[in-house]
Length: 307
Image 1 (cartoon, rainbow, N blue to C red):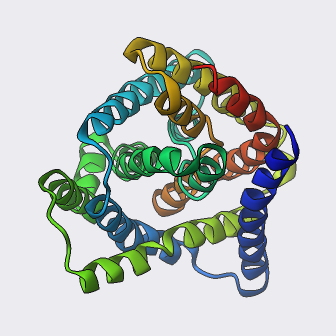
Image 2: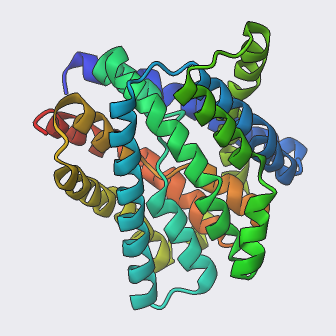
């Protein structure tokens, strides 16, 4: 909450706002087919980002194990909480799946990584990159399953996952990481170049989706405010429980806590755009939690230093 803190959020939020604003303007004047951009990010950009990130990761294997366990347990807790709340409050199936998406998946990449670098330095950034890779794998497997459940049966949704190239990219990337196999420099640089466009494309897509959203009707929906509360209050609490369960301390605990408590993932907008479902709830949730994060994240970053 000093000058450096204000500078931190200015350097992270302004690029995001620029990309989202350009997406809104592009949608207003050109009305593009956003499903093409969703396909591009899912089937081209994400796999390239996964392979290039994992292949040159220098994180120690013990840290990788901690991050993997945290990601799995925290995902299960968030999914169970969102599923239970949706059933208790009798959400429709599309709204249920939308809340599960926005509760489980955080914007740990294009927002989270710059934040970690500025708040915790390069050591925190390295931990964050590994968590992002696992997050992208999850959002494009489990997230794809949840999103496609709005339009397909469970069996059909699982079949959709089998055709997702990111699963195979993750297998290749993890093999390169664990066996220490370097990619040829030309291949690595090519994949990194393409994967680097991932954040920009999904931010533009968010802006396009927000432009198409009926804001007046969205604000009257109780599902929206419950989903926002789950992301802002419920998820940090569940992340803290997971950290205590695993006995994590210090920088590792601080980074994982803050990164998991980021606003709702923009990737959810991509998946809902591709497979249908309650696109309006997801897009407005992402926008509101992102704006709210400028207020609540400073508190969480400060508090995380005592973990």
